[in-house]
Length: 538
Image 1 (spheres, rainbow, N blue to C red):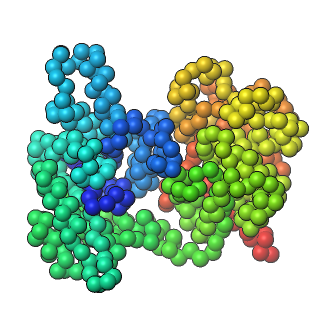
Image 2 (tube, rainbow, N blue to C red; image 1 turned 90 degrees about the horizontal axis):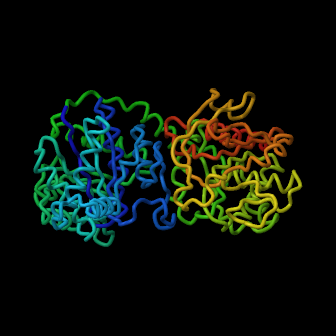
Image 3 (cartoon, one colour; image 1 turned 45 degrees about the vertical axis):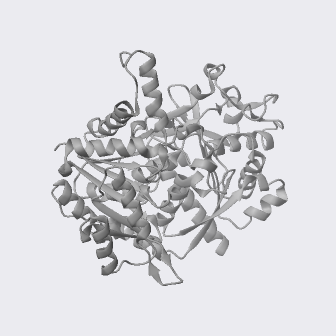
C-alpha cells in the first residue's frame, strides 16, 4: 500500500483536544490492522520543547531515540502503543534552522530562499518521511495551533500541496472545532465552526470530516446544517463530546463511525474491530470507588500537564489494582519544615517525587523523602526524585550533613550527586543523557520483583548522576544500589532494604506506561500504597 495521509487541524479556539482525536484515530485504524504512525507539527519557533518552561508548554515527552518532544506524542504512544521517534515532532524552529543551514552551505545554489517553495517543501519532506522511514500505511499528522494563526500558514499550505500531489484517495483532512452551547438560549451554536471552515477554505483546504467538540449531543438538524454550510456529507459531521476520561474518546468516535468513514475515503479495507479490552479498561476506570491517596511533591504542580505522563501512569496502575488514584498535588515550596511535611503528607498512602531541574523547591522534596523513609510510606523517586532520596539519606543516615548535588550547591564537601568527569566543560545542552539506556538489575531486589528480568532499557532525560566516589559509603548501608548502567557503571536504581517499598530511578518509566498495561514500577508502587491503606484500616 502506498502511504496515505490524515491531517488534523483545529479552529475556533486552542486546547480542544486535537492530540486526543489524533491518538484515537490512530488507535482505531491500528485496531483494524492498519500500520499507523502519529506525528505533530508545531508552528512555534523553538527547536523543541526541551528548554521551554513547563508552565508554558507542559511536559517534555522523551522518545526512545532521545527526542525531546511535545506532550501529545505521549498521548499517541499511550493510545496506539506505537513507539515514536524524534522525527515525529517537527517545529517551525527545526524547519527554518534546516533551511538556513542549507542556505549558508550553498545548498540553494545562490537562489532566493522563499516561503514557497522552500519552507513548504521542507515541511512536506518531513511529513512524508514520517511514513517512508517507518513503513506506515497511514501517517496521521496533527498541525498545532489554530487555523488563521500567522505562524501556521506555511504548514497549512504544505498539507494543501500534499493533497494536490497524492490525490483525494490518499489524503483526508479532518477539522476539529468548537460548537459552544449557550445556556441563555438553550442552543448549540454552529456559527463558530462555519467561520472556522470558511477560514480553512480561504487557504485552499476543504475538510472532508468535521469533528465537533461539544458539551451536548448533536441533533439531526444541527448535523444537516453543518453539512450544508461546511460542504461535507452529513455522516462526516462527527460528534466529539467531552468525556469523563480521555480513554473513552476512541470508543465514542468508533460509535460515531469515524474509522469506517476514514477507511472508505482512503480506500482501506475496513476490517472487523475489537475494542472489548479497551472498553473493559474504561468501564473499570469508571467503576472505581475505593481510593488510594498519592502525594505528588513537585515544583510545577500548578500546571498538571507538567507531569502528564506521571499522572497517567498512576491512573493506569490504579486501574490494574482496581483503585481510584487521588493525586494530592503538593507544591514542594510549601513544605518548609517537618511540621509542614506532617500537615501535607500524614494522610497519604504513597509519595512520588518526579523529575525537574533547578534548586527551587528541593528542600521540600528532601523533607518529603525523609518523611517517607522514616514512616515506612511507599516512596517512588523519578530522576530528580532519586537524587533527592540519595541526598536525604546521605545527610540523615550517613552523617554527611552538607550532602548535596552540585546542581544546587558548588561548595558542598559531599557532592553525592554530580556531573561525571566527561560532562564537565561541555555546553549545557550537550550534557543531558537522553533516550534509551541499558540497566542491569541486582537479584533479590524490589526492581527485580517488578520487572521479572535482570536487564532492562528505559528512557532518560537528566544531566546529573549519582557520584561513584561515594559508592562504598552507600553500599555498606541500608540503601541498595540495585540497578546500574553497564556501559558507564552509573547508578540507575536505588532502594531501601529495611523499608516496605522505597525506590528511586534515574530514568523516566512513566513514558513507557500504557493505560491497559501499567509500567511494572508504577504497578508495584501503587500495590504497596494499597497495602499501606489496608494496614491502616485494620
